[in-house]
Length: 216
Image (cartoon, rainbow, N blue to C red; front, side, top):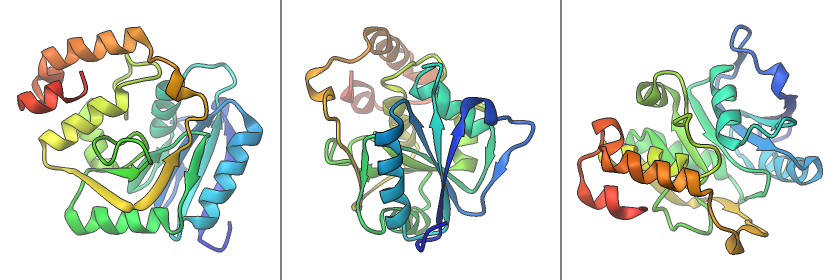
């Protein structure tokens, strides 16, 4: 554990077992990764700068099951008041987690979007959720499990915004570096799934037409 109170732990997928869950009294942040060097560099910086007691689980997705599936597996295998997600290319600002927790508690938020340097708070590309709220959305999964790599965070954000449970804290910086992604497209199957689910109001949870059209 570093001076900020955040423990950084590297684990394999096989170590995430819902029958023997990992407990933390603070927040648990999950970082799925495939590039060990990049992930550990990002995790060390995030741990040093967190500013709050927490656990960062860097999960090696050695079978390439994808970001969404890995986050869902980690969600089922952990217990904590707050649960969040970030990628291996994240760059953390100072006190990023402490500021996020403060904003969530002050505003009774279910989901917080970090300042990722990309979406200006419109969606939680990297996010932190109240676990109790998360458990009410998909009955066990954190993200909708049909997505593979895109749009799961978008759907979750839209649902939180519809419920008035979303908050953005611009001072809580967790930048998505996106070294190569700006020139890359999104998964077309994920895009099609999002559009289909939006047309049905995400299982009738969202009725605001502006939210439903915002990211389609």
